[in-house]
Length: 454
Image (cartoon, rainbow, N blue to C red; front, side, top):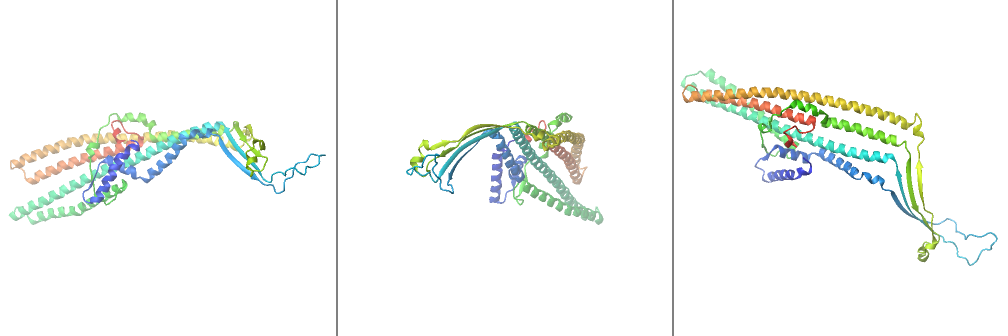
């Protein structure tokens, strides 16, 4: 998704935040996509990169301005320190009625020049590479932010589910104490059994309070991450099940490791070094400078308008010239240019090694993530089977309760067992989603079937 296409949903999200602050009561309902839009619009680091990318784009769009000649205009008033004298011809007496030469002189000029060399072509290519590298870096930065927000969003959902499960356990314990109190008063159990159950339930209360505080603290950190007031109440709109999806042929992603953004960045860095060395090689070749100038000189009084506009009083000393310059010292064996060429060749080899090393590192990371995903997938299948067993156990407990063969506590225990099994499945699905996001971030492109994450 481009930055421009994010403007409308971002504005809607910002208006929603402002509306929430105005009313101050209802929580702000946030979906994962809306949270990503807010984070991208508020991230200062990303904004700085956007400005840098804009500068590189401007340089790229105007890359051919190096072929525009430099043009300048000038005008100079000159007053000699000595009084000018009229020129005399040897053997001819001076004419006493002749006018004295003007005290002031005026010289003007319009000059244009253009230097042509092979380095111009290298500079144009370098501006293109810099622009493409800036766009790639900007896309990588935006994806890092997006993946981080999505991962935090789903982790918060998991924390909230875990908190709800803990609250259900606590409420079940409180209800069981009430049941035991009735049994104690009826003389069916002793006080020790009742007190033991009460102590166990009360021990859960501090942990439950800490768990609630942890969820609220995580919500505040998440609000700060996406650029809204940390004290703004938030309600997350989404589920881990919606984000969970199986992907076929994960091993096939290994064939696309060369397309990973980290590998592409390493490859572009090497290409920039190649272009830089080409520019150094181009400095060995001649440069051609084309110059043209018009330099009119006034031979009369510049403060006399009639003489100033008289064309006969002007003489042009301008000229057109072609200058060819051939550097000589770079051809010496130990010249600075030769040393720089050797250094640049070594840097290109080092960059090629870096490309290979980066590709291997990305491949190893992808293999590790894929193996984790395969393990999680296998575990999810077992947990789904366990949920079916828990559902059957709850069904049998309800039937037994209706027939008078089971107590209400047995039904509640079966319900908790089912919720525990469902949470275990949700936890594995959360791990799967988190690994998928990590895999996307490592590769730098959305996985098949998950293009909507853009």
